[in-house]
Image 1: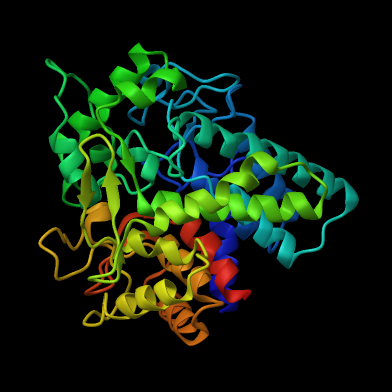
Image 2: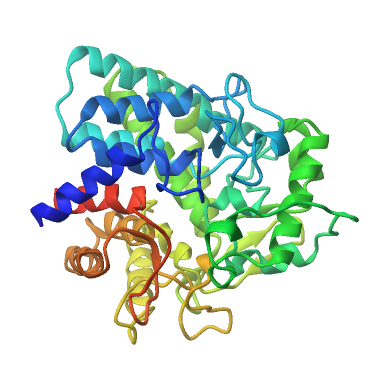
Length: 418
């Protein structure tokens, strides 16, 4: 355990650049990613609180004036990655992407504050981050729920954090791909095509990107003009928990947060309306095409992280989750293995991801401690056996994607310290 702990710490330190940390140490992801940095900050908090705070401060240096925090910040204009800063052509103070990612920062800050003691100067910096996070969450309600439904939309699959999940197959099938589309993928230079998204997926991704860029990423326009608009269960679950955690921190530290607080009940009730009692599952909703997306994704179970005030639904979802990977040695696969959409090694269409296990572990701690500890134990066993990678086969445990993966190392440090 102590050797792996040291290895995890060294992965973060070796992937660290000028105040921010890369997802890995190869050319696959040569920039700062939004939700990666949140996980990474939690990992740092166990052995270097200064690095933890700086990681998030660096992320919020890229916050746009309207409150949005991009999903990628290009601190260095590295063209080994596509799409890079030249493709996006945006960013306020720092070149960035023009879309966002699951806003888990306030949940990470709450975990850090619950676990560690901070000096008065450190607390001042953390509370400054809390205020910036408040602006970020307000941005979602303003621009991603303009009709005040209670649910926020993602307008690009990359915003979900689960880029090529089968969840997006139907919405993407409705996209009219731009004619004469030209681009060169760089991910296939450093990773096998067998484990990466397909060409048609990328055609859709870049068609959406180009459309957003033509509108100068104006948030008042994108909701209406995007050819992709989904109220995702996984994203909204993380968002709802982020709002709850922000209100908790804000209330405790006398920070005004009524704009978020008064929205929480509506968001929770709207999420509950997406519960399918017939199979004890939550399903995302394609807002644009008015279609329920009944895909057996592990992210549907992120609802447990949202801490719904409905014990009956929580218990039913837990029972469903217990059957999800019942025949596999390693869990949880990103898509249920008996589904026709399951692909054992292709990115978000089947492999096990450490962050998904971690989200479910956290969501179960106060609902089913025995099951939570089982998930923790199996996750640690996978890392002990296979080391710190991006994702793994649920059947063999074989690692795929990037090695020395930062969030796998960071979340390992959290798991062994709880």
